[in-house]
Amino acid sequence: MAVSTSYYPLGGNRIVYKAQNFVTGLTVTAVIWNPDLTENEEFTLTELSNGLYWFPYKFVRWGIYPMVFSENGIESQFHTIRVRQGKVI
Picture 1 (cartoon, rainbow, N blue to C red):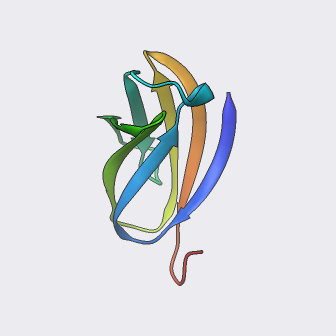
Picture 2 (picture 1 turned 135 degrees about the horizontal axis):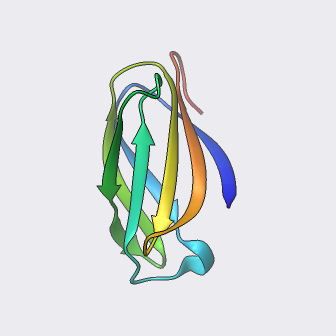
Picture 3 (picture 1 turned 90 degrees about the horizontal axis):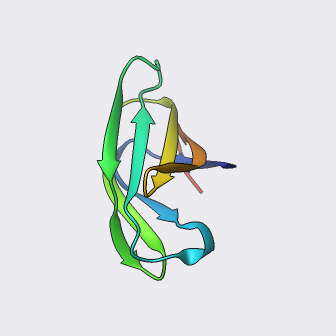
């Protein structure tokens, strides 16, 4: 399972996922936890094209948001998103 980290600002954002081997036609889901690890939400991603999938998400506070992506019900990637103050590059 791959691990990666991204940096995002507060507010509305688009989370983009690349399927393994850029496979199309998958059911891709993401589970994202809040920074306190007390709540999580599950999202079904929309296929953009060429094995890219996305979903909208609004970060409402600073911190680290862990995520697990699944392809057709099989966990495929662990990802952390760091939401921080200041310029995000």
